Length: 351
Image (cartoon, rainbow, N blue to C red; front, side, top):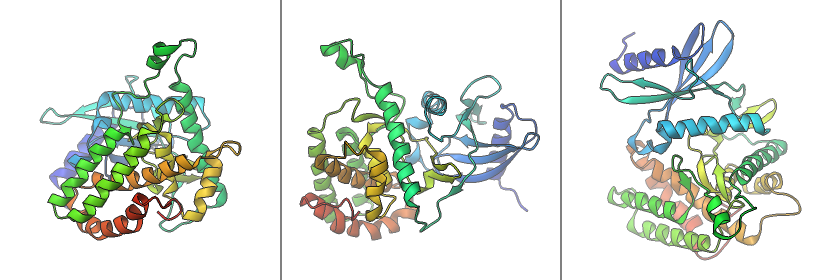
């Protein structure tokens, strides 16, 4: 078998990274390369399994502040706190031999590459077309509510202060992590999508409807308050690929894109996983029977479901292999969902 220069480079990088951890007899198996390079690590001496993440994105458009050392330290600290203080079934972060959350390796050209390691969670991916049980859907709703409740407690201002002091006590964000769903972020995404017109991926007519859709969503947000009850720590990337089916229930994994945003943005991403008739089951786990979502909140979730969907298109804009797929799908997305949304029809059970 011929080994390419790239394969030798990756092999050496992985070997360098795992020597920084207190493993006695490690072996590595490649998993995938997307926003990170990921490997399954087996310590054959102890039988313990780990996930090694090399934070080098496959495409430049996938690179962001989440790949920087301060952002990764924040992610690992969050996972540590969630694992120790909540009932969430998240991966436990592993410190390297120096006691650091983040391991820094260097390429021959001097480029700094950050690596992190997490304990492996035994479970399986959700299969294509698999329909989760009522219990699993409800469980995911409860898991997400636990995550968002953590954010509400962590980001709540000191109530002993009043006026500007209390307001200043709540920041609702962290400059080293990305933010999602705000008017500013939505406008940035719209700018990324406009590039699709220049590339011939989207028609000017479809983009005009996309712009109108974003305008409607942002108008909704102007009337929705930002505060510790509505905005805080979110996963940011709830998809089937970031969920594991375990013996204990559904586990949320891959907090690489975690950041700050509206809790309803996170819930909207989760709702997209399920068929229309299953979304009420998810909401029954996510909300309290005494405090169901209001019509305004459902309307906001519809907008966030569209934003979450458009986010994938923006994320893949630099990936030419997805252009034909997007070119084929965008007209349907616009006519079947954006048009009804801007005309104030409900799409919560349709999208």
